[in-house]
Length: 124
Image (cartoon, rainbow, N blue to C red):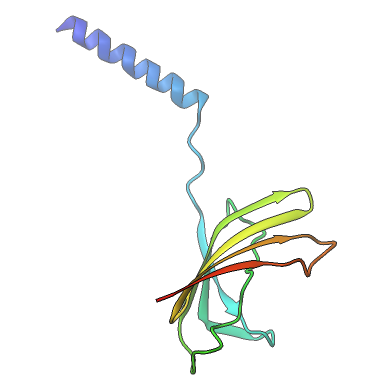
């Protein structure tokens, strides 16, 4: 019985040392904002979700809705990944529309703002 308690205490100390060496990351600070229409107005039907801790400078890649769908409908966008390497910001955005799921990837450079973006569209 004493041996088992001693073993548990040693294991607890080992775990505490590991936790000190590798602190847990900050919990996500999930936030969202309303999208923007092409004319600059507020798009209340497009909600864009992102993590403030990981992606503080997130700007959506795609703001347009699916052109082949008539009428207005709710859309959800999620920032899946964003990495800033020098002046280049690479972003991956997931858009869930009415008839498609789109994954967009864009390397954005301040010197070349018109650089190509890649879009994968999955129709359901």
